[in-house]
Image (tube, rainbow over the protein chains, first blue to last red):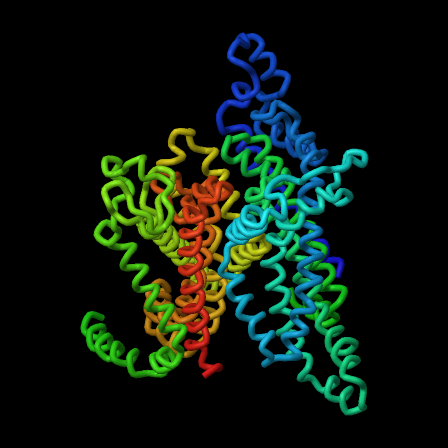
Length: 326
Length: 312
């Protein structure tokens, strides 16, 4: 057990170091960082001094170590485009992405699970079939097209909902929240649905498949034979036993929600980290790209680590296998 | 080698049209429809200059007076634009046909990239085993824990920043193929590795080894033919993913440039006109993209079931 955790931790650290190395190499070798930081009228002496002060003449390992230590403390230097510290930019945009991602995740789970249960229980019902057909179309519909369709119908034709931005936000310390104002909530509806839809179909199909499997098992049949009411058999016995894989997959999906947020934020001009990253890629704003690269890798490594450990805690068979095998 | 290839091919082709797979194909109308649509789409894309009503990139034939016309409207010279025109007076139907051509070329090229890389690594990993196998599979695990579209986006971003700015548009095509290709090799490698490990220990492979056949030849002649079925299924479904990924990156503005637009680029261009009610500039390329992906997905789903003997 301890060996397994240590191996996973070591792997996570190696991944983070590899990503940090790529990010650092980008920062150091794409263009001259000094040229990107100073204006045209900076003298050669000033440039040399800045170079000296930033330690750009030090050996590569020393510079990389400094970069990694700074990155671990959340320092990524100045954005070329905005002329501001990257850490400040990220702090500013972090709440927007997190609120969007969390609301979408909740939406996907809250709608996906009941739909999955329903389609499993009423397998041949008309509604179930239409859910299944819709989910197939949903998988073939790219995220950005869903966003555009929503904008066209609810923003342009019906004029019910705002089509871009976060609306009014309230600042709570450094966190800005759009969840507390009517305008903020209205602005959140379309982006949240866009982002949630794909995960929703995924969760629905997963719950359906797991439910169908569990409903065939002996303990469910036994529950029915004892004369337990259908609702008890379906929800307390069957659904409960499907939740382990569902929780795992949903946990892993949290990471991809943050990734797909890039697309959603771009469609709705949502002022989050994803939009910041796309603008940085278009403008070759390397410090921002490097920071986002490291940050997103960190998210994924942590999420995967937690999910792996959860697996381990939940499934006793795995413990035996791992102890004997690898 | 040459003499046994001929007769075998001659035996196999009719097999395809009489066997179980052909039978299950003709029994599923939606699959036949998808396949027919794909054949038409591929032909239209391949012969775009002859099929498209206008050449959207021939600047001389464009008339700015014809810009942003609604579907079915008649242009100055009396020509009809069935799907309307865009901001530069380009016929939307023609840009879709040319755009699908680029989308499909990028999609197919990146699938081939992933396929060659994944199958190669999978064969080596499964056949050689040991530390090399452990290393390749570890890298695959790590890559699999990130969504493919994110990896493609990151590679695309990093590759773009490595190039001088004025070369972005020129090289965008190759950068995209590389980025999407790298992001997709893991599925191939895992599947092929599994099958290779099974084949490796079978008696006929051992027999081949005993008579002194080299490893390369064994892999090429005996192991590879046994893994083609699953690889074909993965490639089909992967094509749908690759086309979506290309469209997404182009929509985000980090893919194919507007001068030679793909479907994703067309949707991005049209998106600016959505708010003023010119929906056709973005919606028709969108519909084309969805139909294309849906047809590939349906065909892929069917192929997966048809090639799986357990489900027959």
